[in-house]
Length: 307
Image (cartoon, rainbow, N blue to C red; front, side, top):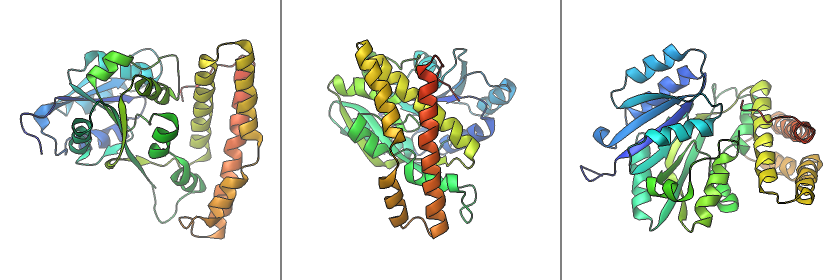
């Protein structure tokens, strides 16, 4: 699709203790239909225990470089990548993602075709470790995780596992907020929206992402997301009264029984049996109450988690 006229693009990938999945991500990027000479890969390690493994993986790819960010958090890591990026276009994905072979080609095309484009939000396809025997958590994730089109429509942002933008947009609205452990991609997207740029959902711009399998993995993700949401809302509150309302609303939205979700789950054709429907509904209830506990912990002096 592109030749020498293709915009030079920087792919930024934060990584933290995820070397084996980074290997798959880099292998997928090596198969891109976008001209190899027209993109660079910047892997930013954010405190991995086995840095030698990360170095070796990056060294295997001639268009990849490794940067180090010691400030904990993926947004700090992405900002480090942005500071080094040479690209006119910027593409974000994560170490545990597997981009489709035409990911960059389609994503950059969408950037170029959309007037005043500030952000392209692509599809994230979840996959199971064993498609024949998905766990209850994997099934729950398949129904709820990474609803990119809805996130863009309702919150003017998308998960940075699959987002493309222009360098000039970042120069205009600023980088990510490094104080946030989660939801920073949505906070950044709102700044893009408020600056008057167009934001586009592109179903054809796709990456794969493994569904979380275990309750322990889901617990960590739920705590991180609940903390990120709470941090963003508190930051935006202008007064003590508004901060109190944020706290009460966060509690109420999770204390209310998830009746609507349960009804939908029992009617969802993707869940093949009554047992699957019941298990997924139970997981949803658990997620709600983990979020309540995390909100209470943060309210009374706790610090949000990066994991």
